[in-house]
Image 1 (spheres, rainbow, N blue to C red):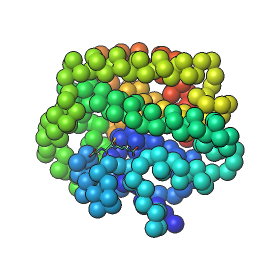
Image 2: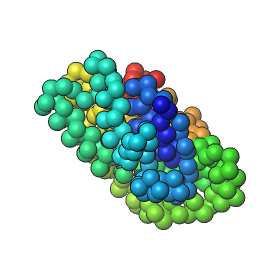
Image 3: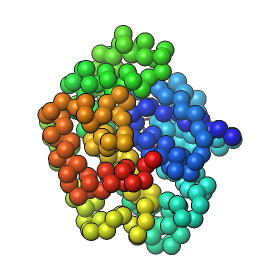
Image 4: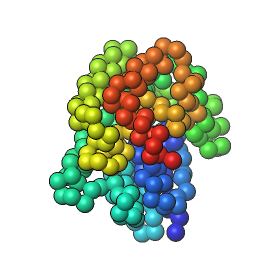
Length: 247
Ligand SMILES: N[C@@H](CCC(=O)N[C@@H](CS)C(=O)NCC(=O)O)C(=O)O
């Protein structure tokens, strides 16, 4: 049975869901929407946000539920949640903290960087939209950019504050990691997957495209900010998880 995954293409929570489904080899058809147009598909499925996974009678409206769904279909050696009760609780707690804190932070920071750069903003979303939405977007991307700027209260001050918060959160992750290769225990888990996926808007790992934009497409000033985050202990961890565990 082929599942349907409703997404906003560049969304990092959607990337988290795709990663888990790909790891489990679960076939899915992705229905990609531009922000706000996604409500046309997600609201009838009972969710304001994406990802939403529909698999037969199962409907999942949280990325963490989609990861758990994928995990049930993974063989023991590839499981994303450890069988040990304490390690499992640690993974679940980290996943929740990252979903609640890191996801909103990196998304708003990305909008702070993209909204003042119209060409880059257009490139991110244009490539991710299916043909009909693309035509709408090409006429009205200024409207979407304005709406996102207001929704995420984009400003240089907010960008500076969010960058400070990002580096503080990265410090916490670096402390959790120490010199270990994984966040919990000695294998790749949902905590590493969630951390790496939710950093995509601000690290742009080489294996990932933010819509139509890769690390190489970034203007110099923005690339400098992203490279500084990439070079931290936590940033290097996210990139290593992409390099070794994404595809
Ligand atoms: N807790 C949700 C968060 C998902 C989320 O915030 N998705 C964003 C895209 S990055 C969204 O759909 N935003 C649209 C909206 O809030 O209307 C999850 O983990 O699935």
